[in-house]
Length: 88
Image (cartoon, rainbow, N blue to C red; front, top):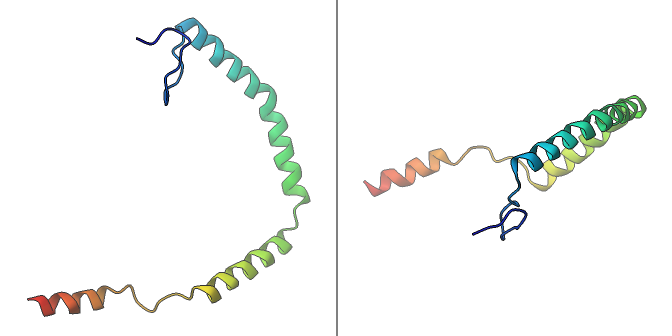
């Protein structure tokens, strides 16, 4: 039997309801402090980003991916059905 605070492989530790509440309260308080800082950082990152350059870079990557692996003209369903019809 697992004792409180012990951990088995692949399982989370068993904690008391009081400990669980204390951990959740700490988690919520941490996010209350950190959330606004992260949001401010995200806003600053968005403000500093160069959207035109980012779109251009994405387009170049997309073109490279298309050149390396061009789309096929069909899904292969017609060929599959042709082969199935031969089995009948």
